[in-house]
Image (tube, rainbow over all chains, first blue to last red):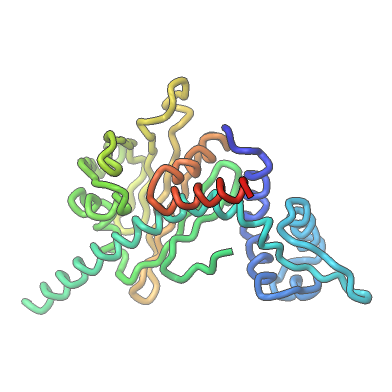
Length: 117
Length: 167
């Protein structure tokens, strides 16, 4: 595979469902670990472990503010990962947009049949 | 990251060997299932606007075979085929899938994935999830890479990457 392993490693780090939830929360702004623990309903050790993985691939950054450590999303690091997967995701999006059209036809037909009865 | 609406397909990679695709539809599940399993209907959506689906064969029973063929932008035909492993009408379909255009030297066994489509209805809307399970991470990544082959937007994205690398 020509693709650099680092890209897939980063993508896997980002794609894990709980880590994706952490990224979703951080997309709305910087947060300390305690906020993430409360919002995600996970234990602090789990959240810290996920944050370590995300930091290792550059997906999140951390800074100290007084006694707190604040975590934030690093969108720039996520872009190549997002680009890699997005074209495949778009294939399915386009496919499903066509499926919407088919479903509208089926719904209209079904309603028409009910009206005939 | 892109903010995905309810209507976008959402793709995640739960493990190194898996791809999970999710999407909600404004239709009850028996209609989504019908559109998913009826050859003349599959022909109308599976092309994803990248070309034309020229043939759809579906033998919808456990052990039955399926084969989809499409052409992309007037290019050569590409085929996909597999075998139904489990069928629960309106609920769940498990099939194998093999892309007939895999590079030489890759065995059919190695490149075949196990795909589970699940239809879940809530308040008249249906969530379709497709879990693709590959034998190994290399096959999984090759499937994601294959998305790069289609569509003008992909070409523009590549052009942008090249332009950025030159800057």
